[in-house]
Length: 122
Image (cartoon, rainbow, N blue to C red):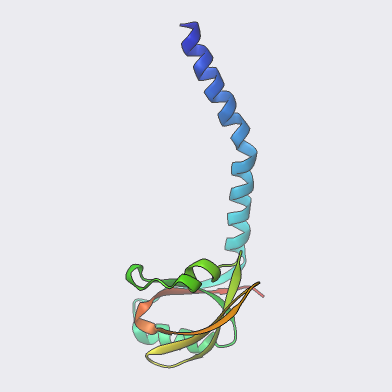
């Protein structure tokens, strides 16, 4: 019985030690969420095209559909590692600039592959 209470005590102590790191992760997530002005998730394609036209020249986060993953957008297109800027858009394609500390890449992505866009606060 004493061994079981000792094991639970050790697990409780280890969980207590993780509280500061969890609080830091929650604070980081809240800070990242507060940097976004608004989210533009659209069910309608025309609304998405109009929204992207109004976002030209702005830094955004782009959420792609699951089957349309792009390595640069997924790895470097978030607030922590880099930025994505919309350069131009039309009804079918969007020209973006993915920028991080090491490189700057210009890419074209199809509007059909975009699930949502959120504008970053400047």
